Length: 345
Image (tube, rainbow, N blue to C red; front, side, top):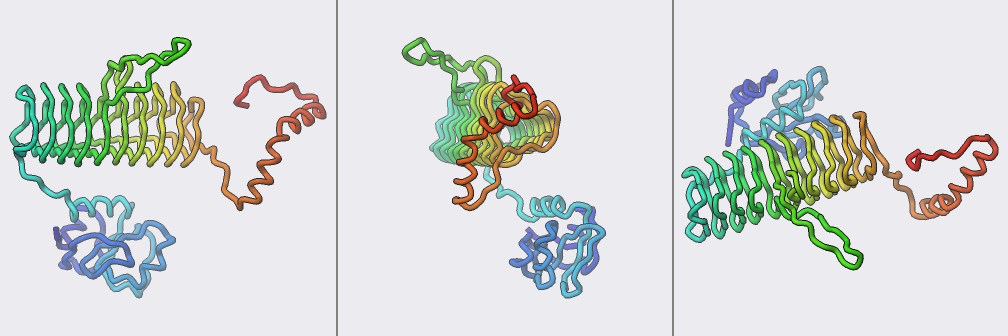
């Protein structure tokens, strides 16, 4: 898609300095752009790439300066990265799909599919499923009985949605996502594990993104809930009965154990581990690789990752950890302090 630069600036509500009639066909990095591309600068570390960029226009932060060597137009924005995201969606829209059900799809006669929906080859749709207007279901998806998929939602190939789960409007589910598999519910009888039926559902709100190979388990008794605007990266595991608050963003390879409730507008870094039956306050930020083993009652930024270092230095430090408890006892003996009874202190 192409746009006149002046029209793009008007839609983005940014101030244009330069040729309003220039045609922009897409977005690109400062290094990779050509005169028909829009670039952006939000991170100062890439400022050195701006002077020599061939971009036809660049998004810059209000109040910053621009090297005189840059020959293209300037678009001044309060948040250039946000403006870039919006421009990218306009210039690179999702590909359109033809409505209709492919002849190879297997659709139960009791399912309801809006005529404007698109169902690709080899899709299976179960009894009582409801597929709303403008939904796109990629090849090889399995939609269980009683599933509801809201208008404008797109499922990429090989998504699995188990029975009775619900997905809201304008969601995007990437390949390999599994919605509604059994949670890890087991009871030990003294010699073996016995399965506990997982009779809850997964309820996904509107405008939710689910990354490739991310799995969201159904609830044991109550539903697992993903609220509006949540963004989930690839390869995330969300256990049964969890609630993820609105507009929370979770990076890749995070594991969230069952019955944990995460508040709205949280940010969780990649490869973090969150134990079960916890509560995380709204607005909390968790650094990548952090292990959360108790509830966070007050919003803030939390981390538990030990900084990396050369291996030989790490081995020396690790060896000292063996003596940490002994050293603490000696310090208490010298100071007269009583040992804490709280294992978290």
